[in-house]
Image (spheres, one colour):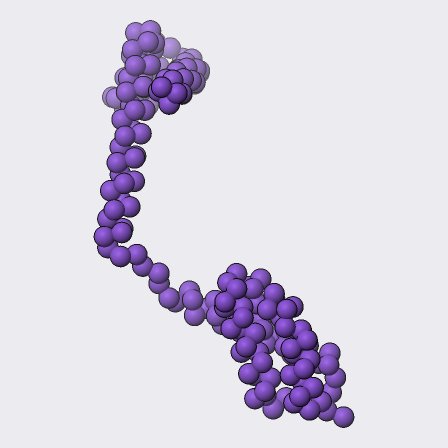
Length: 174
């Protein structure tokens, strides 16, 4: 014998917490999950489906809840959340100031560290990065083999990184 509408709604209401939780797992929004549960209740009231047992109502409810949650996500994806222009400008200016200040401090530290390395190391750096020569060309100019250039650059990178990090740490603590 099919369940009447009161039995269907009673069953759906008994499963309210679990249905709302299932919706929340998809949409991650408490208010939307409550709205989705209400949608399930309305569909249960207006549904022409015939349920023979509580288990069928529960199964139908979870499927309807999942579909409504997915539909909610699709609608939200089409919505755009835009900040006001002055807010975006303020954020951009602040980020630019922070990045510029940080970059200037790092650049100053790197320049100090480059001044501390031997002249031959500075020449290697200049040829490779300022003049833009490939490692093979640097090796030919300095009369070194290619592996030696790679090893020296690797050691130099490590030395400069440690030096810059040390200077930034000192600057941060003062």
